[in-house]
Image 1 (tube, rainbow, N blue to C red):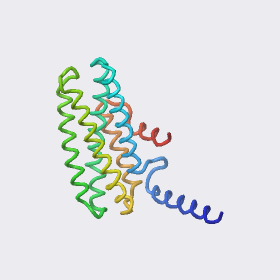
Image 2 (cartoon, rainbow, N blue to C red):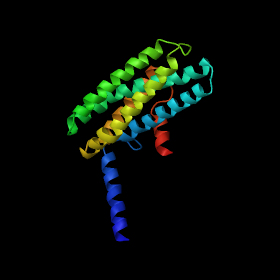
Image 3 (spheres, rainbow, N blue to C red):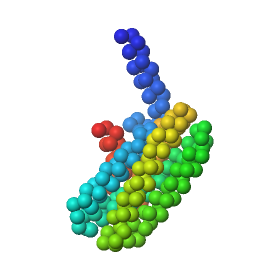
Image 4 (tube, helix red, strand yellow):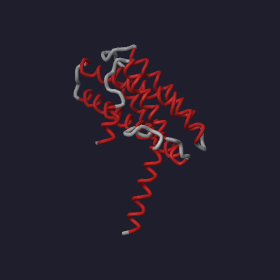
Length: 189
C-alpha cells in the first residue's frame, strides 16, 4: 500500500513541477497539440461520412473549411513555438525538419482546397489525401517527437501556455470563435 501511495505522490509531484511555470489550468504543449490532432481527425471522419452518404456540397464545404483553418493554425503554432523549442531540446532534431517538410505538403493541399470548390472533381480526393498526410504526420509526432520532448525535460507547461495564447490570437484573426477552449474541453472529457 505504501508503494502505491509513494508512486501516486511522485507522479503528482512530477505533474505539478511540469506545470509550475504556467498559469493554473494551462495545458502542457503536448496535450494541447494532441487534442488538436484528435479534433481534426474527428472532422476528417465527419467529412468522410458525408462523402459516403453522397451529401450535398453545401454540407461538406463548412467541414472542409474548418479542417483547413484548424490545420493552418496548428501548423503555425507548431512552427513558431513548439518546433524551435523541441529542436533545441531533443536528441534527434532532424525529426523537426521532417515535420516541417510534412507541413509544407499539407499546406499545399490546403491551398488547393481553398482555391477550389466541393463541386470540383478532385475536391473529395484532396480532402482524403490531406487526412492521410495528417495521419502520417500525427503518428510520427506522437510516436517519436513528443516522447523525445518529454524525455528532454522541455518546459512543456510554459510552451503550452505560449501555444495556447498564440492559437487564440490566430483563431481570432481568422474570425473563428473556438480558440483554445476546444482543446481544454477535449482535455476534460
